[in-house]
Structure formats: structure tokens, C-alpha cells
Image 1 (tube, rainbow, N blue to C red):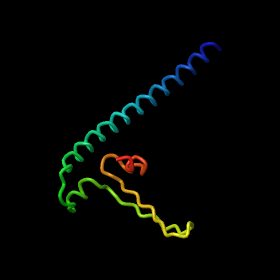
Image 2: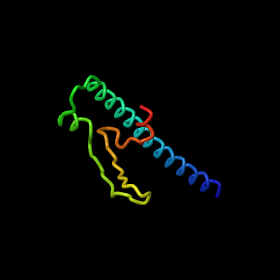
Image 3: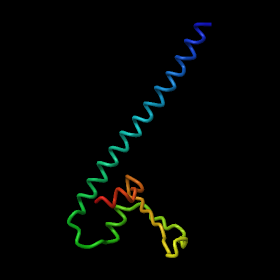
Image 4: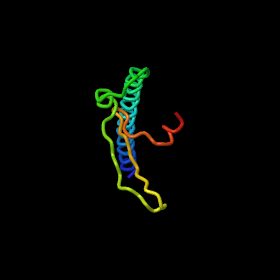
Length: 96
């Protein structure tokens, strides 16, 4: 009976450890991607012209949502998915 509880707790801890290791690997990959993205951004700091090559290098996808007319004005949300980091929140970009 006591050994059954011990074995169950041991298995739960083993699963938790595997889950935490997976999360740690994902966070390390995310940190590496952010570093690589920052390197790309630095490459284009003195950009004089926005070219298709630059866009292809920096942007993965552009999502244009259906227009919203509830406020009396036509508003349309556009999300840009950047290479390596995905969609950045508008609040983060507004602070730049």
C-alpha cells in the first residue's frame, strides 16, 4: 500500500520532470530564435529602401482580418508574423 503510493508519486514526478525538460528546451530554442531575429534586425538598421528581399527575410506571413464597422468607422486588424519570433503584440511595437 505504501509502496503503491510511492510508485505513483515517483511516476508523477518522472512525468513532471519530462514536462519541465521539454519546456526548458522550448524556452532555449525561443531565446536562440530571438537572438537570431535581433541579428537580422541589426543587419537592416540603416535601411534606405524597403525591398522585396528584405521583406522576405524578415516577414513570415501577413494576416488581414475581416473589417469591423461596429464603431461607425471601418477598422481592419492586420497581424504580421515575423520570421523566428512570430506575431509581436501591438503594445510592444507601439513602445518602440
